[in-house]
Amino acid sequence: MAGVLLVGLAACAPASDPVPPSVDELPAPVIPTPQETPSPAPSPTPTFDRSALSIDDPASLWVVSNKRRPLQPSDYVPPDLVPVPVGFTNAPSLRQEAADAAVAVVQAARDEAGLELISLSAYRSYGTQVSVYNGVVAAQGQEAADLVSARPGHSEHQTGLAIDFGSQPQVCSLQPCFGETPHGVWLAANAHRFGFVLRYPSGATPVTGFSYEPWHFRYVGLDLAAELRASGVATLEEFFGLPAAPDYG
Image 1 (cartoon, rainbow, N blue to C red):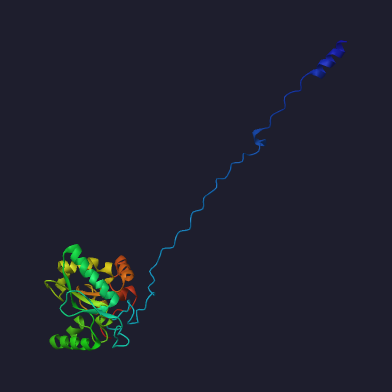
Image 2: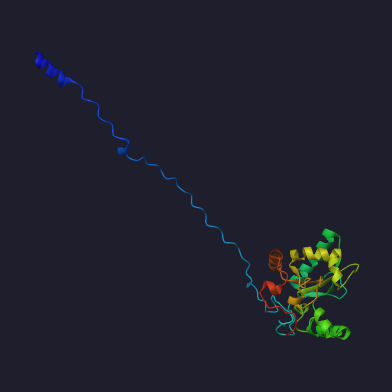
């Protein structure tokens, strides 16, 4: 009986605990990969379209006329000339858009700075430019005249987009010192807001062919005037990548 009992007890003994798996045998933990939010594609930097308007067509607001780029045809007459209702020494006419902008310039100078601007000269026909140029040649000689007056067919005034501003009362009219007057300083700082640019800046004679004329402003439209201001480029020749025009070649 004792033997049977031992066998029974052995049969009833609890099974030994299973051996736990080693660390090396455990499956590697699954770490969820964070979902990356894709970065938005960078927006392209807008660039100014320098080919938007012609620089050759005399009817274009961007036409570039200089000593090596005569107007075509040379006796071009703008189709939409209108009187400019501002004070003047010679009754001014400009193309409609430029005339409206000139009126706005004069009004802003009055409202913002208490300055009175007038027009000394605006549109001049081919025939008028013949008389003007010949008169300067007679008074100063051709070499000197070519620094201050365009030959007929090359003048910006013939486009109906250029105006010579002066002050009322007149101080330094058509002289470099106009740039140092309150009127000249205001124009240099603000004319671009109305679509005008100082066409013959100081130090640019080797490019433009003309002496510094702080009174001569050229209408090019709001977009181009703003771009020239922002870029710091001084002349239309440089902005459009044109050859310098120091002489008539």
